[in-house]
Amino acid sequence: MGASACGGGGGDKASGNDGKASGKASASSSPKPTKPAGPPMLLDTITPQTGNTVGVAMPISVIFTNPVAAKARATVEKHMKVSASQPVAGAWHWMGDRRADWRPKTYWPSGTTVKIDADLKGVSNGNGRYGVHGYTHTFKIGDDVRADVSVTGHTMKVTRNGKLVRTLSINAGSAEYPTWNGTMAVIDKQEKVHMTSCSVGISCDKGSANYYDLTLPWDVHLTQSGTYVHYSTGDPNPGSGSARGSHGCVHLSMSDAKWFYGQVKQGDPVTITGSPRAKAPADNGYADFNLSWDQWLTGSASGEQTTATL
Image 1 (tube, rainbow, N blue to C red):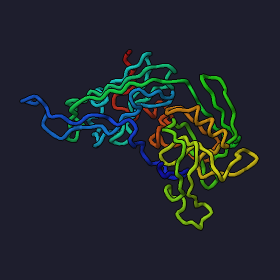
Image 2 (cartoon, one colour; image 1 turned 135 degrees about the vertical axis):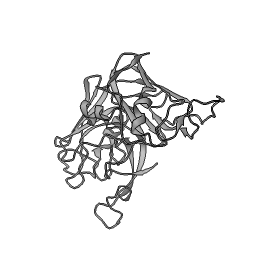
Image 3 (cartoon, rainbow, N blue to C red; image 1 turned 60 degrees about the vertical axis):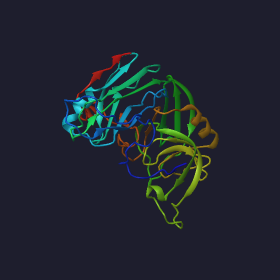
Image 4 (cartoon, rainbow, N blue to C red; image 1 turned 180 degrees about the horizontal axis):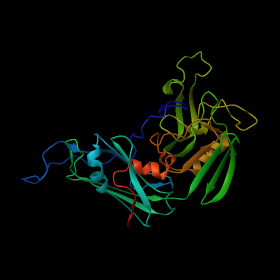
């Protein structure tokens, strides 16, 4: 269990060990290489992992171990081919110089099979490194599960394939520690998470009213800066009647938190409205859909494209 919590800044990058790109660098077999010899260009992670079933808002997220120069990004994008079982319009977008996400223009259609074929052998990162092999991940888009949270209404509406399943009572952040607005695709979920106020810069003073050090259940992870949907012992019966704010997380009752945990998967969109805080930055987890399509395309070197057909 990692130490995390509900506050924190928005500049954290999605990373970690989900979807580790496999393989080691291998020496070129060509006696006369067409590219200058140099250290390898490798990937740290590709998400989602091969074989996973994910939600309709899940991007393909590729993280490089070393920076990719702006001049090389169009070529790199060209060699990261996205295919799908039904045509989908989308584009790559660079979040800094090491992370590139591909997202559809609108949510993925449920039931779509998707393949990312990163054939990077011999491709330059523009900084003296060259790819030495390829990476392939294939995954599927599952049921269209969405959660819409109203901060002011103290409710979360959960839909599956367009039909309302349940409306839950929630509490979101306080005026001092407001919840992020916007759409955040689920990063992952854990049955228990150790949450501390110190880990996200809220308070390390045990005498502070905002200090906490708790292990809490049924945790659905929304941002790398520490936003979760979960149960809190300090707010056991959330809703408009309790009027108790969190440190930025979304609180559910114990039974509702367990139920919601069982409904959602990586990539399902959780959309929060009514908070005084801005939308979560796109790179704070998988909040890619917080950028408009025009904004998304400004970070792409090759522009909008339609997936190849599987």
